[in-house]
Length: 260
Image 1 (cartoon, one colour):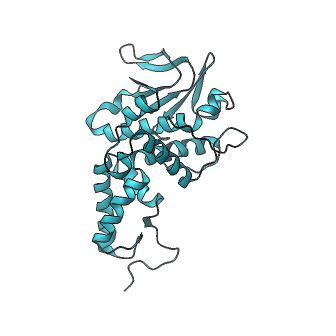
Image 2 (image 1 turned 30 degrees about the vertical axis):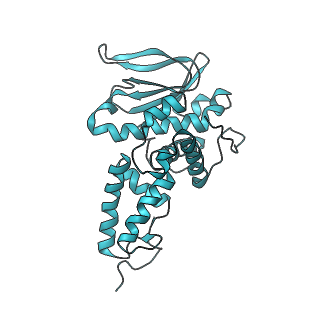
Image 3 (image 1 turned 90 degrees about the vertical axis):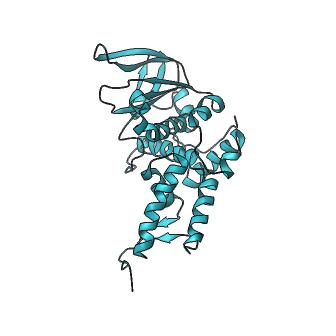
């Protein structure tokens, strides 16, 4: 696998812009399988995780109520999971580099959320493993744990795919993992190729600003569904990706909607 170096804060948190994370993702995907950058479609995120990044995948009941979607284990340790039969917590051994995903994400209606969660945990490993493997970060700085000498991160439902306020390092780490997941599942080059073609078909040049045209607002909403199906992500993830890559922009403050 390609080695990527980037700037870090004194705390060990990477200093990365959206553009830089997209670039890192594309360097990795180019090395893994260049086809995914030029032929838009659904990345086999589990194959990428196991066969390219070299992580172990495991599925467990991570909580009693599916509030924990995934865990990333940075060093050999025991991690807490939920024993459905006994209705109590228990510990299982996990090796460094293990991605744990909640069994609840195996259902057909949860596949896309599960894919994003796998990408999120892979993002933690790619961007944050040096911070935690070198013990630069205190386990308490995330919803994480320390079992013996091992460190792991728990990613709750509220952490994965949600907007945040960036009040602490934890917010930045979760945002970076989210953005890396989007960049892997919807690579900038492939995503842009599809969007530009669709925009050209309806006469949009470059980007679309919401509120400019009622019909086009509806069309852009429908486009998010098409992109979600193509890349096998949620509609929300596709919609956010359109905004993050600046294809869809919000109205300027105090701008009159639908002029004319």
